Length: 497
Ligand code: SF4
View 1: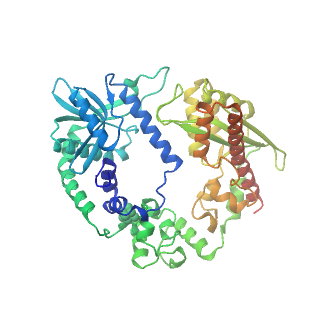
View 2: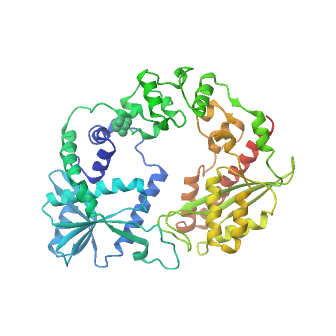
């Protein structure tokens, strides 16, 4: 299959023709190609949504083989007169493509391409879906197949689970033929260009990402720019929003943050980041921090949730991709220098709703007075809004919790404390090693939110061995507990300034 161009290659070409070339011709120079746990979860979501979409075609048959054998298997089904083929696979010249659901329209006598995506109408992904579908439409026509319509099948963002899921309500089908027709001319020009790049034996030039912030770089960046340090001007906070500034720095061959001139115009946050990196001296505003800490009202509740989002909701009352809180850790400090109390909850019953049980447990331990200290109020606040929607009888309580929030992260995100070793970040994991170096996540089996999410899913729905389950539960409890204890210790460190 090395000589073929697939639909995924086309997506790569759309992102960057040079990256497409490196992926196909020189993959050995690419870095970090391994999928993260998060990426793997996205793939699983896609597969799950596809299974639901297939339920709309009761007589559909699945092409199970891959590569050349898949083309033959598809042809076999076509010869047998099958009307709905899942993962129907075709090849024209060296263009190879697989249609999620290939459907025959009896009334109009043409084929329909049904492109299934695990998204729920997000605008930023829409363009990519349209180009992707247009590529398939063009190649199908090149193969002499009569295609009359292209549908996009996505999760219905209005869907809210209530009892058994009905695939017709979960999956939203949108006819995108008109948009595909509008893109046809453009994509028709891309295909020969992609083939030309593919046939080129020389490395493509130039690589424009030297002018873009780190999150735009593909795995070829380091190979293409060996003189750019791993931590460079591309990592200056929010530099992606100041492209002109980044361009000027690059034009002046200023790659290292250490070399950014003192009089170079930057935003306040960017200047702080550059200054602490250059001087290695932190910026600390003790007066502002003290003032902020004085807003706190005892008892202090240090609260953190772990959540699990699924493309297809598991629990009643939830919508696609809703973050379902399944665990909390709560440290309580009832008075200054008082004794620290700890409470926690981890949902372990696969037959009941985690949000209901968690909400009930939380209400038992949080009184109606005192600040609720969290790290990133947007996230915890949304959890509370969702609980309030699910349990209207407790809505007032959970909305009230949001009014009592004290977001400890803001001391760092608003630059009252900037340290060179934060490297522009302000997650607990960026801050803790600097302020409380004796505490660490390193020795834990669960070390971040994505790991917690995966561990919980396994513990709840996959692992049967009781001993293993208990071990996973302990790992989860230990992780979440460290998150709130870390907040307590960071708070204590700030008090000493
Ligand atoms: S670093 Fe950017 S411009 Fe360079 S090859 Fe990768 S995606 Fe393309």
